[in-house]
Image (cartoon, rainbow, N blue to C red; front, side, top):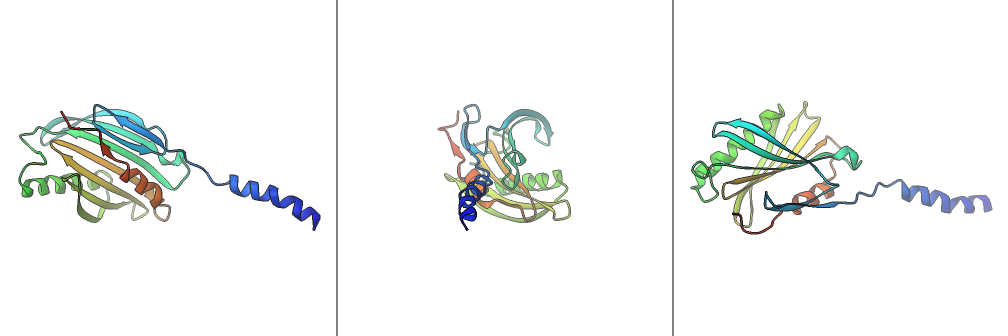
Length: 184
């Protein structure tokens, strides 16, 4: 009995240490005019992409969720500026709806996936979409939030494998998105 009581604090300490504590990092991008939190500092890159609207630069901020060991496999924030003559959040609703539909279709096609759900959302009166898509025959999922702020598209994504979603971390990531101030 005494031996068991002496082992109890050791077992309790091991049990408590077995939980990975993820220290989230505040991230700010002045050029992109936004801030948010990632499980750790994201990797940054730029990609030039040919689109029907012409060549565009995409600014990508990504964190590999496996490094946090907390369920979600990917955290991604991205933005791109479109020519105002083509799209802006102030354009008529039908044009903005078509823009989002095309963006969603493109995102789902890029992962060779299937659209699970989509709904209209907004951020400070700017239009947006909340999307869920599956890929790898339903073994993987991506949850997206997109916002069109004037002529800038913000694209936020969390990817995870079936049964391994960490909804608390996902909501923290999505809810932390904020604009820094008025866009140029």
